[in-house]
Image (cartoon, rainbow, N blue to C red; front, top):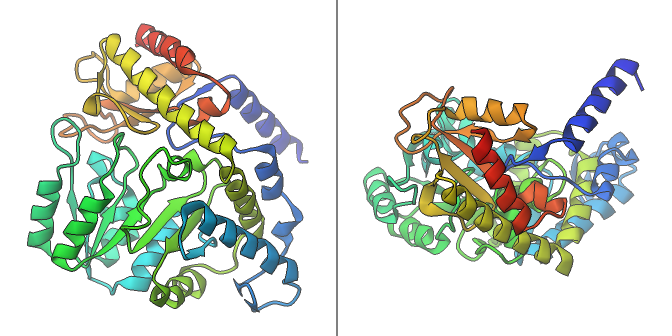
Amino acid sequence: MDPTILDILAKEEDRQSNTIELIASENFASDAVMELCGSIFTNKYAEGYPGKRYYNGCEHMDEIETLAIDQLKELYGCEYANVQAHCGANANTAVYQALLSPRDRILGMDLASGGHLSHGSAPNISGKVYEAQHYGVDANGYLDYDEIRTKALSFKPHMIVAGASAYPRQIDWQKFREIADEVGALLLVDMAHYSGLIAGKCYDSPIQYADVVTSTTHKTLRGPRGGIILWNNKEYSRRINGAIFPGTQGGPLMNMIAAKAQCFIEANTPEFKEYTKAVVNNARAFADQLTANGFKCLTDGTDSHIILLDLTNKDISGREAADLLEKNGITVNKNGIPDDPRSFVETSGIRLGTAAETTRGYDEEWFRALADKIAGII
């Protein structure tokens, strides 16, 4: 290995080993997953799909991709799946291309309220190709389904996007389905943050309510970095698969698909279900102790791995708090809050997550002590 690269790798290994990881979108993959990410599967081009490749020599590529698809369908109880998306945003982009036309209307969650760039945000391709409007949360940080319904009735979107990157509570997928049906819209659920908890039966599944579901495979699912698409309507299959390849991507990353297969197998175990229970229990204990230390948790707690701290009652911005915690060996990310008085650069909140440190085996007592430590630092 090049000595400069080796030096950077060693420094990153040291950082990860000696840092408390609280970024809600990060986790620690198993050795098996990481080994497959760097395996000889990376050497093979496999454009197309199992049984329909554009290159010869894909017999074993077909085997590993089919295994990944079968394990994924079993994990979430769906009929069809695509495991080729390079990331969650690519998965969303492909679904839009498959089921919408340019300038069709999208109603997604506002970025400032906890949504994602790929849900119609102006800088993203989803906000440039499609006409997008957004719904948000109330003053306490909760989704207001009556307001979402009112916006949907007024805007008449072709697709409603449910799911979030910074929302601590259970999302009512059935409510979104009812609103979508009332206005004649498709329902896309982006479950990227919650997919591991859903696999472990610790967070309600959207599979029976959504037309299409997308996710990343890292975060709470604890796999490699990548995306997936799930659906139950056979009529969507050709359009969705075609939107991934050749619509928006070229050759699939077969090393990552092999790692995804390993991830799905791991998530299909009783041990993983116990892990997800611990993630949620740790988050609730963490939130309770942060509240006891004078912090304001949006929605007064959590149903997931996510905690959002509103720092407006502290003399510090989200950026300052994140930088201060990093200097003390704790990584979090700055995050906006509803009606944030500060800019996106500064923000008035921070986002915390319990998935990564739960992987390391820490329990509720440890997270309560960590809440005390964070309070002392801030």
